[in-house]
Image (cartoon, rainbow, N blue to C red; front, side):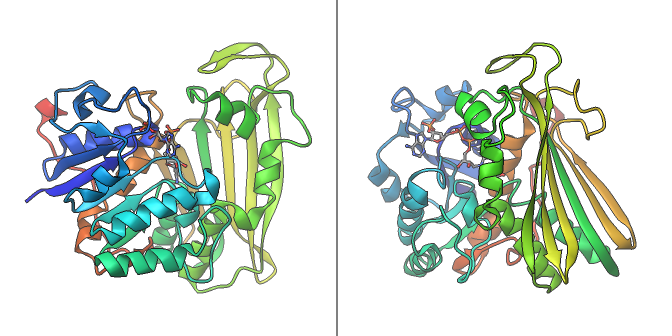
Length: 365
Ligand SMILES: NC(=O)c1ccc[n+]([C@@H]2O[C@H](COP(=O)([O-])OP(=O)(O)OC[C@H]3O[C@@H](n4cnc5c(N)ncnc54)[C@H](OP(=O)(O)O)[C@@H]3O)[C@@H](O)[C@H]2O)c1
């Protein structure tokens, strides 16, 4: 029997998720929640540009709540809006109505504990979600690629091979050149702007305990049974464009930010034990001594044995940025496990091991 799945949100992540649900033999799409008025009333197949599905997109939350479904794939905007309250309300209502939920929408929910409530997670999030799971006898799992996999779950999985660990280093290398959001690119990340001492990345990363990446540090430390003395922001370095070039949001002028690198340090017993680094680029033509690539994560666990690993991803779909696809697959591949789990809140430390993807015939690939 197929899992009956509702898709909530059809942005970069949600569209990948919708396609996955429609294609996958053991999933059945039973509902679609959208916000954009242009999408309301359209068949899910039209939203994707594929064959009709018979499922019509709606912006009516109550209509979605009244549907019979095994799970909701919840990928709208979340933690960035109204301190996460709307998303928290939605997720609690879905859970209480008897539907399991897998979500990427509130990154602050990537690791929920009674004593760990980041700004933006929503008021009394842990208690409210637990009560809703109890009421609906349902399960909630929040995940993503980072936080959710590459800087928390992946290193802790490979640490199972370790005897002694001296330091865990993970770097994320992403190209932002095809990212179409003007607001995210210029205002939130400070790309294609002259470098400024009061830049947005320094502003949000220096509130280390409120960034979702603090959760990566905590999950690694908790899984290794150690306490973090502190988590420190190491500051941002930038590389500037030496000649003008085009990206999705327009021209990057000479002297504006074309690449950036920043990191967080997790301090355990007085020394840096966990080093998480981000290298985000608009081009590989600058900062030649920084790692280059796209959809690339590098892991180095110094100790005995010394473990090195790499995740290199690519996709031909949409803007060809793998990140959004990976966020959707971390959610959807968990659905069978989430649906058979005991009611309550799951995280990567508590979710039973599972695989992902579906095998298809070469003709349908
Ligand atoms: N942990 C990770 O690694 C990770 C990485 C990337 C993204 N994320 C999270 O995943 C979520 C989706 O990201 P994305 O890249 O798909 O975003 P996006 O492309 O900007 O998509 C925006 C989504 O939000 C919906 N939306 C529009 N107005 C809204 C409103 N007022 N309230 C709530 N939602 C609204 C859109 O509706 P329509 O369906 O009508 O277009 C669309 O589904 C975000 O919350 C993001 O933070 C997590």
